[in-house]
Image (cartoon, rainbow, N blue to C red; front, side, top):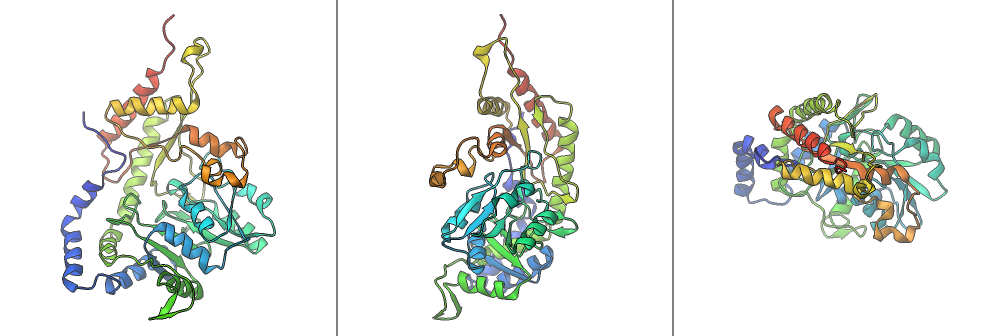
Length: 391
């Protein structure tokens, strides 16, 4: 029995070893390690891929969010609506510019921001909506944009986990006013280190982002604003150019793996499978199920909290050589850092429930059918292991 990791980056590198090594060698031989044609070319290619006119590469997905908010002039006294069920970088960027994150509960089926709850969260301080296309599944951007446009709000798409995902025929990152991307190694398009990008069709926004990422300078030693140092490394740009050529192939493979998971897992009780919205095309950065505790009323001593049941299943799977991940065990509105915002346990129940139930199974383009069967067997066996003790 082979151990199956959540993602296998070494296998991906091995398949592209010659191309990546050649691209890296060219950069090293050039003697130019900051900026240059690899960065410019990647920005142009990525803008074309997303379907926008402008792309500004930067140091990380977190910086992309920060730069986007800064470019829109969002700061102290402003509010930005977002989801509590995501990585902290989304809300952290809002806080970093001095604004206040306002959390809206999620949809049970997609794990994404519940668009139906947006209107109730909008105040006279609201300046933007920041939806996250979580796990590769796009938010219903048609309805979200209708709300934003009717209220005069900016929309910043967090596309970190959804590079290549489509809503209503358009790639995410081209629908809102700004799209923010991460090239963290585990993303569908991952660098060999950190990296990010901001996409837009607004030249003025793009120019401001480029100025802010260069210490607030649009010309050397002339500084117009307090900016940051957030440039995409030239080596990473060269690597990303190689990988971008394969992104659609990898995303197709992820979709095939997700479809196979659907088929294999559908008959199994005790779990709930991820559901896609009509009109959206997920790229399955994660395949995330819900593990739902079964009642053991005849043996109260065996009763577990929902979190413990999920963790029990996860640990049992690990013993069988199947690794899994929990994204995310604690929602943002209950994180210690946001205690001052005053959210209470039970206030955003669907996000809290998801945190107690979600389990992300291994998924990467190279995952074989045999490995998937091992994952499913490990999950099924682990679920079965939790049975009432004999009387």
